Image (cartoon, rainbow, N blue to C red; front, side, top):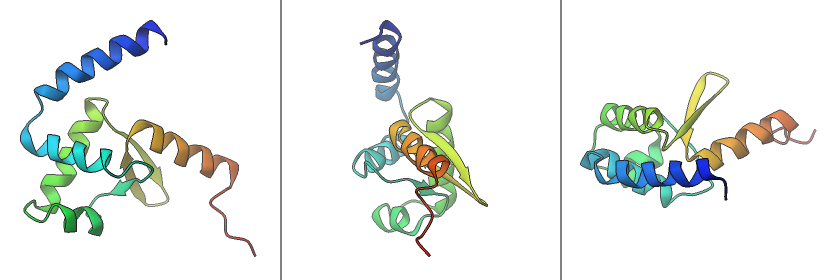
Length: 103
C-alpha cells in the first residue's frame, strides 16, 4: 500500500470520529449501499432516512464530499454522490459507453 493511502486512511479515521451526527448517518447509509450512487432528493435515501429533510441530506452529502469521504459526478443534468470507488466505476462506465442500451 502506498504511504499516501495509509496517511489518507488515518486522516479519514480521525475525521470520521469528529463528524456531526447527520453526516455520520449519511456516511453509514452510503457504506451500506456500496456499488450505488445517489443524487440530491433521492427517493431511496429519503425513505431510509425519513427523519431528515431532503435539503439537510443534500448539505450532508456536499459536506462529506468536501471532506473527501465522497466524490461527485455530473451525469446529464444530475449530480451524483457516492463513495470514491463507486463514482470512479460510474465514470469509467460512462467513458467506455457501457451505459448505452442495446438497440
